[in-house]
Image 1 (cartoon, helix red, strand yellow):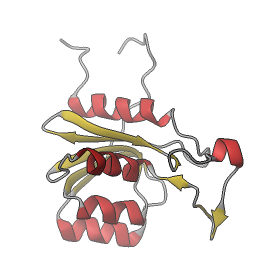
Image 2 (tube, rainbow, N blue to C red; image 1 turned 180 degrees about the horizontal axis):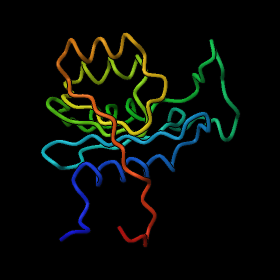
Image 3 (tube, rainbow, N blue to C red; image 1 turned 180 degrees about the vertical axis):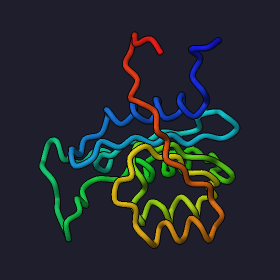
Length: 151
C-alpha cells in the first residue's frame, strides 16, 4: 500500500490534530505517548481542569512564560499517572520540542524516544540531559496532512 502512513507519520499527524484542542495561543501543542506502536495517552496545552484557560481569561505571564497553561507533554504524563498506566520505555510524539521542565519530566518518566516537529526554543540543558540519558531525539519533517489530500 504505497499511500499508507508510516507509524511516525501516523503518530505525528495525531499530535497535530490533538494540538487543535490547545487553549493557549502562544503555542498550539499536541503530544502523543506511544508504547509498542499503541497510543497510551494524549495531551494538549490547556489550563488546569475546571479552571480558566488562556482563551477565556488571558495569559498569566511570569518571566516571559504563561504559567496558566499545563503543557501538552505534562498533560499526557498526568493522564497516565491518573489511570495507572506505566510510561516506562515509551515514546512521545510532540508538535514542539519540549521545554526544559517537560524534558526533565519525560526523562524521569522513562521515555526512550522523543520525536518533535518544530524546533521551538530547544534548551541547551534539555539537549544535554537527553544525550546523557541516551534518549533518541529526532525532528520529524513531514508536511502537515490535510484531510482528503492525496499523498
